[in-house]
Image 1 (cartoon, rainbow, N blue to C red):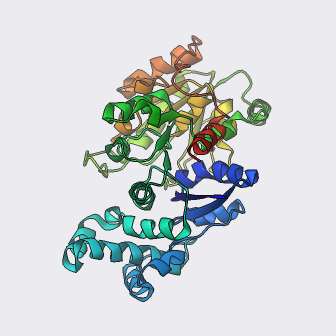
Image 2: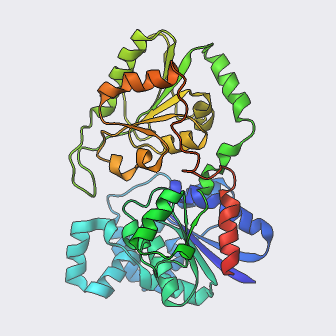
Length: 406
């Protein structure tokens, strides 16, 4: 039986692999092992998926030294869903490899400057792959242990698949290399072309879509959306969903300065427009990471909570407004018009307008006319039908790629 190793960090990375893991295990054709990093372990438990972590990799290093390092490095780190021993093993094994590559003094300098971004445990991943005899490695586009697993697989002539969740803006620097992963699965033709321009061969990059978005193909969404509109007394009003998000003061990679008050300024702009258009209805959806004090809203405006089903909300919308949130991508996949205010320091990382899935706005002054085009004049052709794959088939598309390599 062929052995597959899947590696993923938490958040959107493990969400993309969950449907793949379930489908592979259901076939009973392969031995499927999952290395769940940081919060991914918690997500796997929620889905009844067995997985292992870095503390299970202590056998491939000096476990006592690694744990001593790890507990020292994690002294001020506490997470509600990551166990302390796992954190210590993760930090310790990664740091120990930094020392083995660069020496004690230089490793300390590198870690002081870059923190966990300096981790690339290729040696450790190589020991794991060789010891367990994997025939294929699958990982997403994260730059540390996932990247290391794919690099280690290449060193041992083991085929690998990299599944890119979004746009490969920063990651194209390494995913664009022809020797990085046997196959790369991407969201759209736009992302594929970006990687081809970096030097990938055409046969290596496959447009599959993102398996995490297959849930948007749920046939019950229209009925649920109709019920949502009824429960909120929408009637014939036009629904604007504003998907807010934190705006950093400084972009973590480019250093570009941002305006942390920008999301609240957009709140106020939309509320002002609402007062002028009696048949518009506004829904403000804060990102789960936003810390916002909720203030009373006027008539025809509500907040959407993080507990509310996002897919149902988007299916209920007549238009979706974003800065650079991936909510815009989900809305486009559902065929909803998207307006992207290109005012964020992260706007270049989420090129919705360039991809053909949104109308880009360079100023809030353009917002009223753009909304009126859609809500009052019925303009619905903002999404290029060729820009994105049909939702619902991404999991099977990725499985086809995996099977082709085995």
